[in-house]
Amino acid sequence: MNILHMNLGADSYDIVIERGALQKAGEYLDLDRKVLVLTDDGVPKQYAQTVAAQAKDGFVFTVPQGEDSKSIPQFSMILSDMLKRGFSRKDAVVAVGGGVVGDLAGFVASAYMRGIDFYNIPTTVLSQVDSSIGGKTAVNLDGVKNIVGAFYQPKKVLVDLDLLDTLDDRLVSEGLAEALKMGLTSDEKLFELFEKGNIKESMDEIILRSLMVKKAVVEQDEKEQGLRRILNFGHTIGHGIESCGGLYHGECVAVGMIPMVSDELRPRLIGILVNLRLPSSVNVNPDEIYEAMTHDKKGEGDYVTVTTVPRPGEFEMNRVRFEDLYPMIQMITK
Ligand SMILES: NC(=O)c1ccc[n+]([C@@H]2O[C@H](COP(=O)([O-])OP(=O)(O)OC[C@H]3O[C@@H](n4cnc5c(N)ncnc54)[C@H](O)[C@@H]3O)[C@@H](O)[C@H]2O)c1
Image (cartoon, rainbow, N blue to C red; front, side):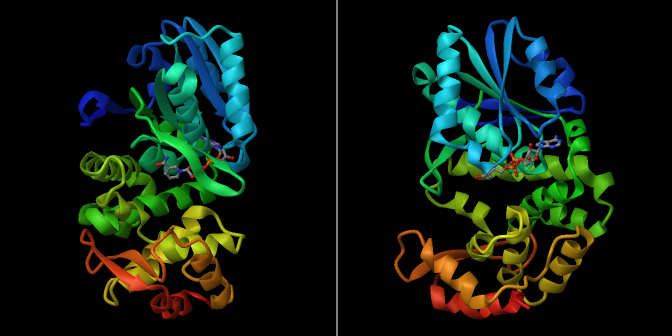
């Protein structure tokens, strides 16, 4: 068992990393009250039920799986359910699911009676290494992702790697792309674990090391003023690819990282992607990716700040013109 302590002043909390933690959630979380356990219908039912059964008064609320559940109507339905069940300020919300469930549950907890206790039990690789810690919660509105939300830290996070056993391989790999991202920018040893190749064997260490990177970044920049942007490494071109459809988010990030590393590092990165069965190029017209990328550019005019990685564990942030990214897109399109 490992416990990481997230140091955020009054909002500090522990991240417990332990296989089998779900079975004894009641030992780690204060479930001696009304507890709404939010999950989705793609997560094995027994995970949420196991938590609810350990609560004094536990209720499971299940939303449809998929990004569309991060919506104001779902948010509102969950709040109405809590109100109907007489939830008070002393009660709690627990997320049992991936990033969709975590982002939605966190936002619900932040809003009900101006904020009640929130716990997160992430069940995907992406949510275990990234989205469950850091306190960003949100829903989407009018097709714009994460546009309505709050910074709201959980009271505790339980990371149980046994829950990943039911996840399909493609989802495991796309989540690992985000872990690889953290190794590239911030932890050479983590990068080398990927390079060693036996991912299953290194999984516990990969998740732990990724969490340590994310923790350090969030502690230094809780509200995304600067450093936290390194978590967007690979995402500028990645988002452009994602808008063109067909690939998972993590797969797009994987491809998006390729042009952002040095020429020496690139073959090593591609070797890892191949081993993870992640794509290393896409069959899309570069103009289409460029259009999509510039379409959702965020307020910096013709410029964008991108993170590049000269060597594993080191990063640079540079302001570049969008048009400078075009040859980089050509590098990863067939
Ligand atoms: N808050 C943050 O800091 C942050 C960071 C990154 C991403 N995100 C958000 O995370 C979301 C993506 O999260 P995700 O990749 O976890 O996707 P997800 O939550 O949609 O889960 C992916 C799929 O896996 C299924 N699933 C989940 N756990 C399972 C398990 N153990 N076994 C079998 N199936 C399981 C789900 O039902 C779903 O169909 C996006 O909405 C993104 O915006 C948030």
